[in-house]
Structures are given as structure tokens and as C-alpha cells.
Length: 375
Image (tube, rainbow, N blue to C red; front, side, top):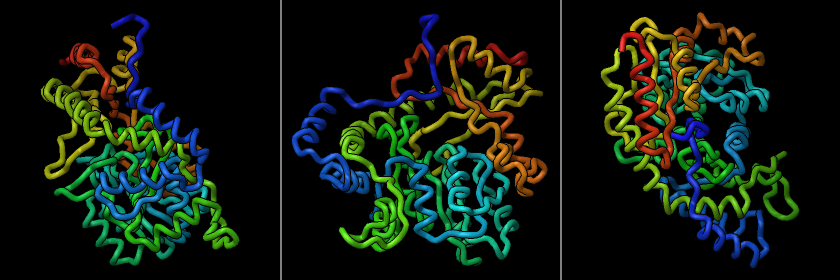
């Protein structure tokens, strides 16, 4: 590897420039840049077909999709969510004047623990917002039973879970709403972008009104909406990305399998097994460092990789609950979140993206193998 070359945790998959140029020519010709243009309509349909969902609403980014989803369901009061996620999950609650209540995660795949969630429900609780962490599905049936029992809404942050299926069915079809992110760092990107998956036409219509200032028609505004529309350039780019997504996921799978094969027997390195019955999109490859067995701290390995211009990420460290905005909440106290606190101090996500070369993959693995004093 070139001494000046930097390997980041991800690199966006870009479509062929010459093919994208042809889409841009059409935009220049028809002069439609936004407001549900032809590429937007086409992308919405083809994306829904690909994902195996009935109703999807495109957004300019995933955070606005989260914020709007909460508005669409009229969520108020308190929402139980995870501290082990990207900050947008909880920020979307804060922006809606909703109090986040943090609950601890499970020790297997680090999703919200349904039993801990049920114990945290109070009369002020109106919804549960789990995250499919690293694209591994939450305990879907268990969460639905809890939501039904207590009359709560169930909103999934599925930012990591593009294309993920369980027993052949998209996990986006569970809960009241699911939200996707198409940020440049994701498996599927539209540069920026996102979407809400709805269970029925009526809900989709309300969401589409809300993301366009609340307009129902030219002279009717039904709610104080926001401007969160996806533009035609993003939509065209997304259409082109759909042509290559299966190829890109296959490449990510290959990298994941190499990592898995090489890291399985290193003392002190924990990796996650693929869930049975789940079609993954291999959005992340996290490893977890047991300092006592591996012989070095997580941050020591993190810095060792950086010395070689390899920039993994500690997803998710620190916990959302440890940021100044949230750490004053009773539910944010570390003693209430022992598993999330421990895992956040062990995790490093390794580089994984379609153009990551075999040589670079092997270099990453060799550093990890040689860095541990007990390897």
C-alpha cells in the first residue's frame, strides 16, 4: 500500500460517470429539478419493488425522514430507544420535543433488549424506536407484542438495514414505520437521502404532505410540514445505483467472509455470526476487543491501525447517552446501561466497501493478528 494512501471505514460506491451523465442530460432537457419529478416517481416505484415494500416516501436525508415519521404518527411524551446508535436516532426525538428514554441492549447482536424496554414503559411512553444495529434485525415479533399490549407505536430506525430480509420478507415491513438512510456512507447511497416505509396508502399520503410543507394541493395546507423532498438529481443517481446494488453487496459479502475466516480464532477478538434465515447487506464489520484476553486495549488497536493509515470507526462510541445533551437524563446513567457501556468500549468497525482491495484487507488482518500480545 502507498505510504500516503488512507483506508477509511467506508468509501461510497459510485455509479459509472458516463451513465450518470445521460440521466443528467434528461434533467437538463426537461428542466424539472424537484417536486416529485419523473425520476423521483420512477425511483420510488423501482426502489419499492427492489425492497419488497408497498409504500415508500423518498427524503432528502435520513434524519429528516426520522423527524417526519414522528410527526406523521403524532408522537409525544416519551419514546424508549437505544443509546447504541448514531446520534440522529435520538436527535429526531429531541427536535420533536419528545423525551428519549434510553434502555439497555442485548449482549448477542446489540439491539434493544425487549425485556428491558418493557420494564421501562410508563404512562408517558408513547412509542418504541429500536435500531437494527449493523443491519441485524431486532426481535421483531417480541417488539410488536409489546407495542400491541401497551398501545404503543413502533418505529424502526433501519438506517443500517437496506435490503435486509428475514425468512424472505423485508424487515422494513415490520412496525408502524421504518426509516432508511441513503447517506454516502451507507450500502446504498443517493449522496444524501432517505426514505420512510409505510404500511398503507393513507399513511404514505400524510408523510408526503408533511415532507412538502404540508401541501395537499395548490391552495390547501393540512399541517405545518417541512421541506424534506428528494430532488431529481438524487433520484436519478439512485435509479442508477439500483443497477449495481446486488453486485456491490456481493463484494461486501466477500470481504466479510474473509474477515470472518481470518479473525475467528484470534484470542480476545469477538465477531458477530450471521443470523440464521437473514439475508444481509453487510453494512458493517464490527469486531469487539476483550482487553484481558487480546492483551491490548481497544483504543491501542485503534491507534495501531491509524499508524498504518487505516481508519476504522468506533461505532458506537461514546454512547448517545454520554453526550452533553442527554447525559442529564435519569435513563442515561451508565449504571442503567451496563451492556451498551461495555460494548461501546470494545468495538471497532473495520473498513468494508466494494473497492477495498484484497491486499488492503490482508494488511488490516495482519495488523490485528500481530497487535495482540496474546495473538
